[in-house]
Amino acid sequence: MTLPTALVVVPTYNERDNLPLLATALMQYPNVSLLVVDDESPDGTGAVADALARQYPERIEVLHRKTHRGLGRSYIDGIASVLDRPVDVICQMDADLSHDPRHLPDLIAASVHADVVIGSRYVPGGAVVNWPRRRRLLSRVANGYIRLVTRLSPRDCTSGYRCWRREALASVPLARFTSDGYSFLVEMLYAATAADLRFAEVPITFVERRLGESKLTRAVLFESAITPWRLIASRNTRRPAAR
Image: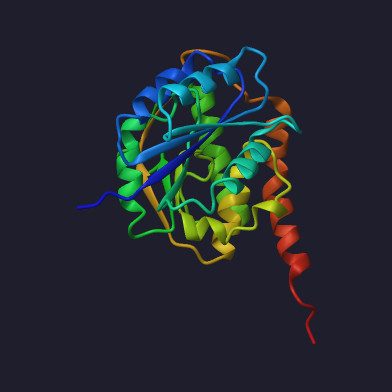
């Protein structure tokens, strides 16, 4: 049986210690390639990524971004650069090892029957490791809040571990997105719902980063809080006026 080919897009900012571990794990899968999208990391992550690309030619590439930094812009630029590649699936992963590569084959396999596959902490079999109770509660409440406001169906709307069928991802108008931080992930699902894409969730064990610093800030939390309402307002604005 021929395995679906997958290209994993990984944004990086100050992940020089984590990136080699992630890349080595991903390279164990012969059907997987990697695009590292680095935002001029001051710790030299870009140079580390270039060395990995030389170590794994034809399988690892690096996109060095020099414009506005941010998770959303990194994904938009990275995905735009690979949408015309002859791959079956385009995946999203964090660089900090919180997304275990051992789950990737399950996500790729589920894409046979779904357009978007989410690595979910909140379906049976999913779990979170090394988060304090307050962080667990915040994540649960945030997902409930997002689902209540937007009516999104996935249980884990904020998971950044995802695989998309390439043709399905091409139907999502990423260039029109305005979110940048983690709320970008919610906007992607909202647009996928509007495009009538099929969702699936695969259980994963999410592990808090061991190296480096979290990118979760108050500004990111604020953007995440207002994004669901902005998406609803945008949808209502686009509706034709009643006759």
